[in-house]
Length: 433
Image (cartoon, rainbow, N blue to C red; front, side, top):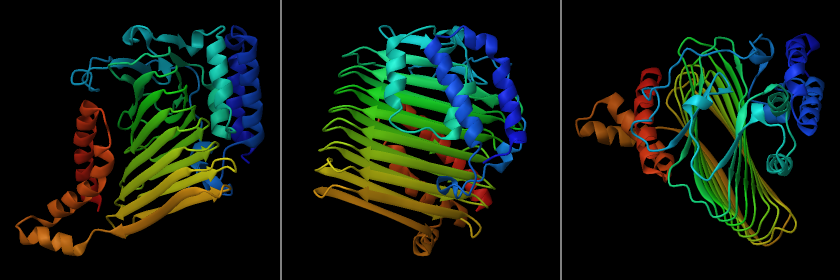
């Protein structure tokens, strides 16, 4: 548990939000009060907590961040994001605050800015359904102090032709950014949601984000998360999804930036014949720590889940994967797979992998596995014998290792965007290998 001196700035910041909280619906205000009490009671996680064993947050707990709304000097003109190359509905957040004047919602989609919500039964119902998982202290902090975000409500049968592309940009040094994205897809609705977190070199920020999705019967969501914040920043993110009958979720996370980053994905398969696929790619260099945590709960029969995570680590970087699949007693005919593979490009890089299965049913098909290794010297020799230099050969092999995750992006233009970005990133890895 963190000491009270570390928590005092957060308690004081919450008290300063009193007037804004009074303008909210009573249930929303009560939810924030409960979340703040929970955060103050638990404090920041430490390495003594089993789920945070390999990820040390002491640098965050001991820092003092700017918690009041901060302005951004950026002018979003499409030069920093693929606005000119990708046809999408773009929404922009600057330092955790929604920029409505720069954003657009697709026709037929109901959207509510969280800072302006006074009521909203569907919003409240969605949050209640996402409470199937308990909150950790950082999620509590987001719900207590995170004052802005967006609720996207897609009616039944809506099939969005373009992705919803949400850009989160942080350029306030020592700023605390806590945005939320809440989404509900009605029966048989289809959408693509892209979250793009980016920072500014030389700026140290702390992003603590939350995204939650409820998929009604037959709904389908493609979810992509790109994290490339500045190398001095901290990034903690939670993604939760509740799936109903015959719903389909495909979620892929790309972790490239930040000094320390942790992405947690928690999925509840609550409807029969629902399916989820979770994938991730970590590209670590220098002294980065990049952590992925997953928890998939099979609560009913006839559901499928597939997890594929890969890490490529150079320099003194560290990759962490903790994946858990829980098959409850009634979840017969479950098909669950989980793999984590890591490639170390230097002797000082490190990977920690903990795939876990907890199976309470008896008619299931479940597998898991993990590997940690280095580049194949025979393959390097083969490429060099064809006139390819040592560094180029290593880059070709590392790129091939990552390509499975990149190629699983179904949206073509975003796949091209990510492929270009990862190829550039391999040059950094090559320099620190």
